[in-house]
Length: 94
Picture 1 (cartoon, rainbow, N blue to C red):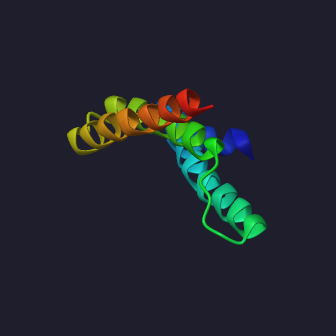
Picture 2 (tube, rainbow, N blue to C red; picture 1 turned 45 degrees about the vertical axis):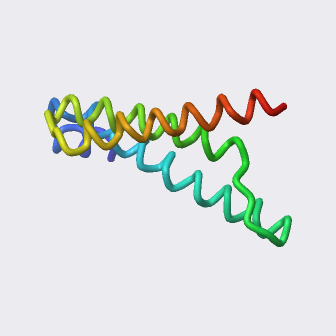
């Protein structure tokens, strides 16, 4: 099944996998944030949210470089700065 999928997508397969994994990271960050917020009965953004954001942004930035998509290159590079800065602020606070 996996082999059929990889044959179908061709040489871009690894890049599609990177793109999908990055999107999964972005989905997981909101899932984790929701679960933690429900646990605390208030909106909470755990540090794992920011780490998953960084992973997702790096993956999508890499994928957008491969695709030569200036919209996503610009968007992910700017958002990556915000995610890293938030982690730095949280670490400094601890």
